[in-house]
Amino acid sequence: MVADQVAPQLLANASELSKAGDGFDTSAAGTDVTYPTTTSEAIAVRTQVGDTEREYSIGIPTTGAPAQQHAGLNAVSYDNENGSATVSSTRDDGSVVIGTTIDGTSAPTNYSYPVAVDGAPAVLTVEDDGSVTVADTAGDVITHFLAPWAVDAAGTKVSTRYEVHGNVLTQVVEHANATYPVVADPTSSKYFKKVVIDKKASSKGTIVRVYPGPGMPPVGRGSGDSIYNDYKTLVSATYEGRKYRDQLVCHWANAGKFKVPWNLDSWRPDVGYTKTVAALCNP
Image (tube, rainbow, N blue to C red; front, side, top):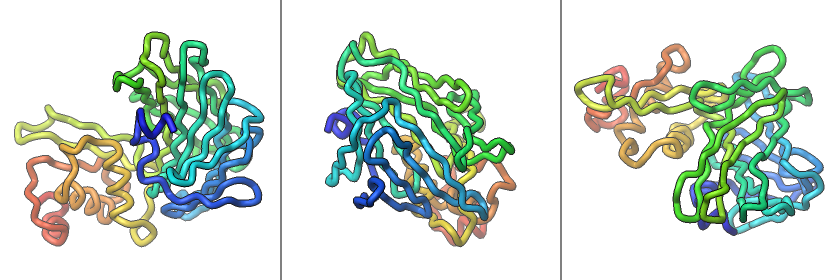
């Protein structure tokens, strides 16, 4: 599959798929996802938001394309028959990845995804960082689409952005001068709204500012490992390692949503989780 070669991170940490009567099912970190057998139906995501189970759906850009299961990659793809294909998987942290592979100049530049919450049109808001917040009509936030990205076969970033029209999220991929194939990705993140690398905030070093998303599980309903795994998809290896994990998990378990953002300080020593907690997450 093109996606795993051009952008392997698209399908990283994908949870196992199983064939079901109405499509392909997978479960991860308290999130259940059903991929339809054709694009005449939407991808259905059932997840816990706070203490309530909610369902949101994401439509696929074309109608009537049959599904193809890629068992070895735990992914489902749909040939859009216009020089592009939709490739989707669910990460083991509950994030839903919906990628697009673009084969040439004849493929569209716009890829639209109608989003609904509990069967009603979702309310979509483009944030300053390019990400999109998904809420119901009462204003309760359900999930976020992380800021979009696109990369070509040469590893070069391709200009891309989100546009919102009603409950339809459109990813615009300006791929005319790219080396094909191009892979583009909107990802619905269960845990984080965004992560900001702030290199100027302190003379001591970099601060990684972590903004928890609406699906961040309360203590006892999630695991530190799954939260850390989702965090790692948003940062480079420079900001990975046990000291970052311990600070992150400490904030999740103790600060919760009462202190945002969660600041992970690069200069803090690696003293282990117990001592990190004893130092109020700042050893």
